[in-house]
Image (cartoon, rainbow, N blue to C red):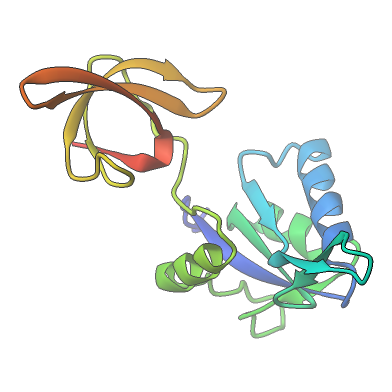
Length: 182
């Protein structure tokens, strides 16, 4: 195969109002067709909007940032492209020139901007951390410090990290996406 084995973000064009249905269908199809190693994440770019009603109650409305579009993180192969493209409600990929051509992925800075605006973190969480490994903290109160991993909770995607502060060991619980491997 001449395809790249790198997972990247693509944009699916859908019928307006069908974005959540497409997300559900695509996730279901990926599982039933054994494509979990090729189709990883599906996001409908939407935000919650809070508003007070006349009687003082809080009303929450979900507003779609990009009506008619769904983001999908996938490895582009003939099979994964076929599964995504033929999901009910999908009209095609954005960036595809038609005639069976594969689409262009989003640029990393485009993905960063979109996911940050949604309050989501785009960093990959499949990093294989090991107890005893040193990591650099890149986010939060301990940013820029180096720490050593003492415990890993893969299910919650949390790490316990010992940090040396003021000549004392301090333990901190951090999310996977708050650290980088050294």
